[in-house]
Amino acid sequence: MKIDKLNFIGFIEGNTGYSVLSRALISLMDFAGIDVRVDNLHRRPIREFVRLQQKDPKDRFQLLHQIPTVRPDADGYYTVTEFDQPTYGSASILRRAKWILTESKFCKEVFEEFTNAPIDIIHYPLDPQYKPNGTQFKFSPEIEKFRLKFLYVFEWLMRKDPYTLIKAFAEEFSPDEDVCLILRCWSKFENPRKWLGWYRKKANIFWISQDLPHLSHLYRSCDCFVTPTLGEGCGHPIMEAMGCGLKVIAPKSTGILDYANSKNAILIPVEEKFVHETTAFREAGNEIPHLIKPWFKCWEPDKEALKKAMRRAFRNEMKFIRSNAVKIRDKFGIENALNEIKVAFEIE
Image 1: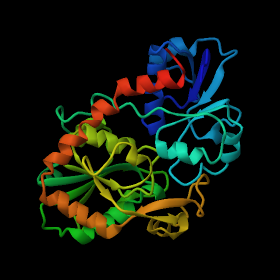
Image 2 (image 1 turned 135 degrees about the horizontal axis):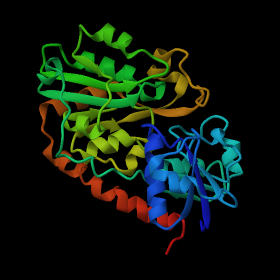
Image 3 (image 1 turned 180 degrees about the vertical axis):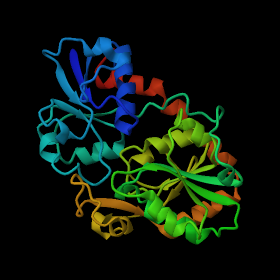
C-alpha cells in the first residue's frame, strides 16, 4: 500500500517480542525512506527515536503494532495470531481495517477469513548478534557441569505449555543422566518455582531469571532449544536459537513453518484441538487471558514424540540440522525485512 506519511503506534520500550520488533521495524522504515512518526504508547521519549517522535502527527496513516483492541480506531494493524482466529474482540476491528501487516503465512491465511483488507507479510528481522560464535553466558557450577543443556525461552503463558515440557523431560531423563533443562521465563500468572519445586528432585530442571546483556549469550551456552508451544504467529526465540546454531525441537505448526523444516529442525507432530481440550488448559487453571477463549483452536504437540525428539537430540550431534539452521540468518535477516517493507509500502 502506498502511504505518504505514517504514524507508527506501539509499546516501543522493553524486551517483549512486540517492542523489540517495533524498534527494528521503525529503523528499517526510516532507512527505506518512509516518512514515519513514532507514537510510543508509554508516552516517554526514546533516545534513538526522538527525531521521529517530534514529527507533526497530523494527516498520517495510523498503524498500530499491537493487539488491535489496544487502539481500535487505528487505520491499520501489524499484528499476529497463534490460533485459528484473531484475539477475542479483534475480528470486527480487522474487518473494518484499511491494511493489515503480519509476520507469517499462517497469520495471513487466518486473517484473510476475517477481513477483505490487503494483507502483507513482513518477517521478523533476525538481529546479526544471533550467531554461533560470540560471548557465552556463564552458568553456576551446578548447571555448567552438564554435557547437554536444553533451553526454553518464553513468557509463562498457557499457550507456551511449559507443563508438557517439564513432564516430558522428567519422564524421559533420570537425574543421573548428563543432561539438564533450563527455563528462561517470566510470568504474570504463574510461579515457576512452584513447578520446579515439584520436579526438582526428579529431574535436572533449572530456572534462569536474571537479566542478560543479550539473549544470544544464553543461546550459545546451550545445545538444544525446545518448545511445546500450542501455536506461534512467528516464534522469535525459535528463530534466534536457530541463528545461533542450536538444535531446535518445535511443533510442526503455525508460523513456525515459515522458516523451520525437516532439514533445519526437529519438528514434532501436532493434533488440532480446542484450547479447553489441551493439557496446558487443564494445568493452567484459570490462567486464560481475556483475549483467548476456550473454544479457540490450537495445535498441541504429541508428548511422546517430544520425548523421543529430546532423546535423539541428547544422543546425536546433528551437524547437518545445525548447519542448515544457521542459514536462517541470511534468509530472514535485516535485508529480507527491508525488502519486504519496500514491497509492502510500494517503494521502488
